[in-house]
Length: 235
Image (tube, rainbow, N blue to C red):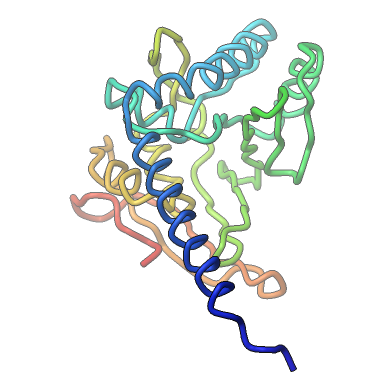
């Protein structure tokens, strides 16, 4: 049986908890400062620019997605982003990974839907949409709540538009594509932003249970029957 802690031990532990709390609050405050956020993003934007350049030189279709895409649409850097996200069709994966390796990036293929390109302690996630026939593609990703699969029209992935953030130019997906990845988004402000987007055709998610053996929630995107904003599918 563990002996009871002495008064000194309890005091040290209490001080340690206070110190940890103050340190965490202090770092949260620092990270919220615009100057700090911009400074921390410089290296990530540099990685983004390097990957965009490598893919463009090989004429590999791609888009920047995730937080950098949302901020490019907003017109300003709004917060700290831990990584850079790219989206490609799966048939371009081999050529894309080879182009990035040729640039000296450390490239790892994790699944048929995801790869990582890293340089030092920085990395970019490459999300790969798999063709499943009938003009549709799918993506399966593990989330904290379990695996999620999204099926969307293939032509949602292809359209893109030019964007710029922190002086770097790149291409971002169409609004209908950004709406289509809503089931994968867990950041509250990003979800609210996506749900505010107006698409050319109203869209709606149909949910069903997917492959039971891996406990997958499946979402199929289709045109809605009436005008509405994108629905929240992960309540």
